[in-house]
Amino acid sequence: MYDRYVLLSFGIILTLFLTGCSGQPKPDGMPPLHPLTITVTQEGKPLAEASVSLHPIGGEHSWSSGGLTQSDGSLVIYTYGKYAGAPAGKFKVTVDCVTSDPPAPKNVTMEELDAHNKKHPAFRIVPLQYTEKGKTPLEIEVVKGANKITLDIPEKVKLSMGGPP
Image (cartoon, rainbow, N blue to C red; front, side, top):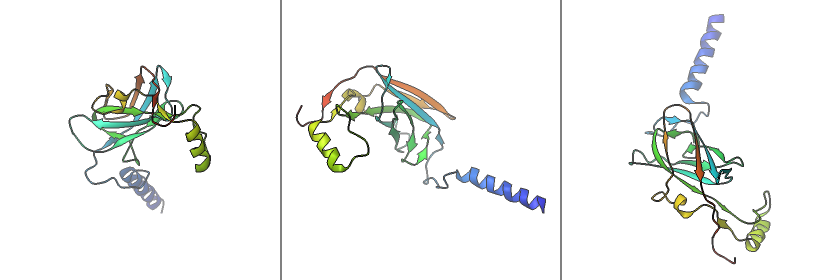
């Protein structure tokens, strides 16, 4: 009886290990993903709510990887928005961050958000070169195993997104 429970427990653990804890099978052809945490700073300070995307160099694959930074500038990279990690390889990194002054309030209705946006137009705070994969100077390499990378954008700008100044 005891052996049966040990065998059953081992089978459950093996199944979780092989399928992953999320239980979602990965798409056919998706390469192994490696944990990747990126911290983005601007002028040495954390850059919150920035959109980060990885673009493979050399066309090794076409799997979309990226995420949104938290208040401390960090983010965990996901591939296809639901699989933690990124494939091994070299990547160009694009970063974009749009805000307003003051920033839009959290947990408000769409009407309140629209009113805020009309009064306080949005602007980009990341230089354009960092937002375009063909121009960004940011490059990283993801290797097998855990990866922790810090990227700094050395200057801050205020580029209008249109509308009244």
